[in-house]
Length: 253
Image 1 (spheres, one colour):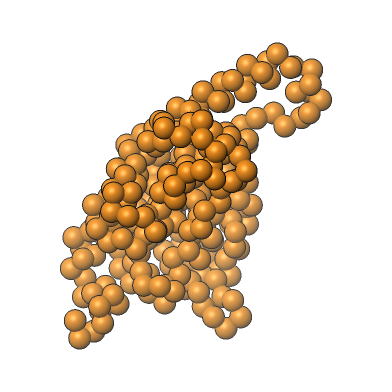
Image 2 (cartoon, one colour):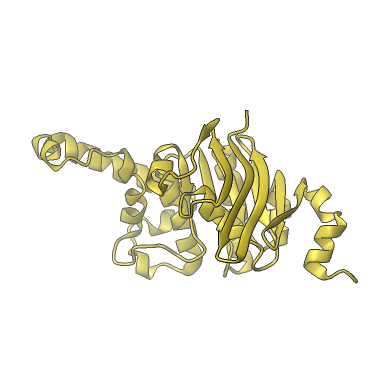
């Protein structure tokens, strides 16, 4: 059974068919890329799967169970994490605190129980700080453990978001353009990090425009165009597909 199974997924915004009858499945442990020209529906597809939008039609199953209509926090409790195109960092907090925020679903949020268990709470918080520091080392940000988020460079903040998502201990992580706006050195660091995340046992689904990164990383690739599934396969299969070449380069090319 696939970890994630999407069947005939569609969403319409008035007369605009942003995603149309898209189907695919993702096995556990893969790096699965979603690519396509601007406006192809890639982020909309992510928003449908991660509970931000409710589909007009179609089904989404995680571990064989329907997740259509579940909220993002409910999906997070089922092991689904997400980053966004635009940074969602709390700039008035430290880098370490930003990562710790990712663990909030695993905490007891009852203030009365917390007050009665103050020594245990202090021990738990110390453990969380160590866990967050370990995740920062995992993503290559050990030099920023004591830093404020607003003092960090953009490329480091992109990896900080991934560390925060990993603090949720997900089984499935969606990365929306993790290399956007990065220089070649920073892009290489993200490339290595995504493979490292997958090797740790977390299934990775990513939207990315950097084709070199996509081809280096991906086990399978889904190509969208005008909200429709254009192709799916390995990097070699996608690269040789004439429909994909026409969508990216024009029919004459």
